[in-house]
Length: 315
Image (cartoon, rainbow, N blue to C red; front, side, top):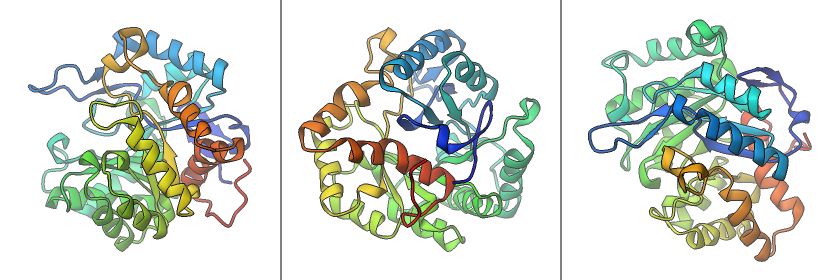
């Protein structure tokens, strides 16, 4: 497998011996007039570091794929501090979220210029930090089909991924629009196994999930524990349906902590809900240790590095 790019430097995938959280946030700011709580900043760094450290010690948490990108309050230096203090590797992102959060730089900028901008992030590092993203995401759209600006940002994501060898993780609003995203990304030249379609646990449609997986994309059930959006019982049913249809090698799991109220220190389910609650239910449904390792470690490593399912994922 290819080396992973993390916020503290290159990482050999063979050193990732424990589970991976495939879609999380450690530093972000999505506050708008309607939502003043969607923030993780310096006030929360200590809690986040403590949570990740505890998960490393209790469950062997080895890696977090942090998907805060442009327009979402990205803070590369904060990610590096949390990673170093918690001793959990962190992969950072670049790209653009869905249209309501697009920064002015998107405007009417061409897909070619947007692509060049992402490639500079990836090859030269982000601003003064010099930290190089290891994934493009969470590249967003809302609705069944991307808007015109979202088509440009998604096209740029795909083209930058092809040029740099990174993978693309997407944001679908409430799980809707994954097939259109995958079609657009692959039309721009990106192989489907380099795509992870986000938030599919918010869409109770196993047929869509099977279609995405059959086409080769990863299906992200990545809002585990957010029961005000969807119950974990439904998430488990959707996961089991994918496994039973032969697509266990195309599943990614995470909790998508995206506001400070989700932290355990503030009474939330935290980053560890996947390990403490959801995976025990998956085991009770019959999943063995190898299947759990496939979904929580080998799949996300394959997604990041671009290995396909024919290559041995025993990193």
